[in-house]
Image (cartoon, rainbow, N blue to C red; front, top):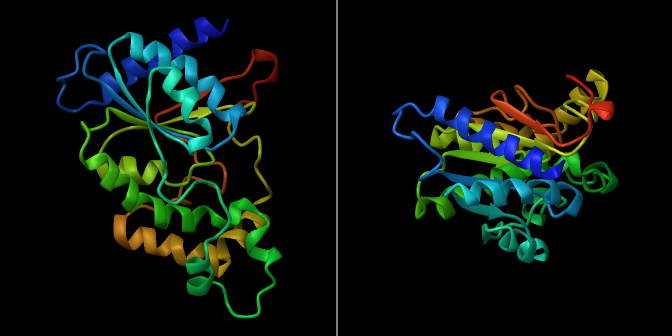
Length: 232
């Protein structure tokens, strides 16, 4: 079943990116360069590895960004491993706290919930990621986990599709009431870096996304069984 899923996913990726390539130069998987962005969690990475292997067998170049603890796994699947310069899916950094968090704010308000760091992570990661990709062939697509807030920003800047691999039952499976989401997004340590990303890159990460739920408008590959799937 996993092999069938991998082959189907690879075929959909190849077909979708061929349709979305404006030049029309890509007539086959040969010459493709897929860039994966993922969090350091085996449950999120494992379902992507067979897709990586299948794409690699079709002649694609695969670059995989994930923290070093999972380097061996992605390399064994055939990808070239790259680290995130600032780590990934971590609490707000000290510089971000100094820049955005009002003095006297209890630490639990901004440090205990990983959703609070999503906008700051995008502000930090996008310029570093774009620099790292500058010396490589232009990506055919960026494939990222929905926990990754900066995948769609990088894809927007590069003018390529952003595709999501979803290891939960389906889109919005972690959604919270709108009032809760609005309250999170209004916090200065979320709103500040969000505005910084908009100003620099012209992309609002929350216009079509929520913390830990940054889905693709192009293609979302849900790696679950039919009985557990939750349609959007």
